[in-house]
Length: 197
Image (cartoon, rainbow, N blue to C red):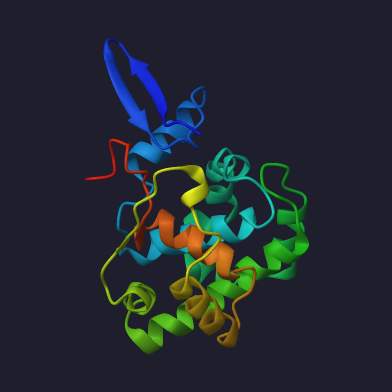
């Protein structure tokens, strides 16, 4: 599939081929967030909640519900989410603005608890997470959509460790998507304007 060429005024902007041309929210996400290294624990937790909610669905679906998730999940504060009660779970299941999947909701709460445990052990979740790529983003040379792997060994290793620690809905494919989102892996296509940034 050829790279997407988006024209803004007289400027031609080449983006990754998977970016929808008619979705300003998705374009902004691609241009300003995806692949930018993240070390802030709160932002990392946000991506973990959203990525685990995406499992089996499209990122577009989750991205368009992001603000609803922010309100529903205490502005992605892991300490507050870890304290969610059965009443909170009931409210979340009745919230049409998010993906109402009981297992994913329970996973987000359980993952918040484990997230806090990792912070205690490592000082920050970021330090723990980035250790799986030796603190240096992996650079891929993606030329076509077919070049994207389903996962990578580092994501498999990290997912396995997360599972041992009690996290759920963070399998190798989801972990790889998370690693791409937070810049642990640089997967902008070689023809994308973001590739060399």
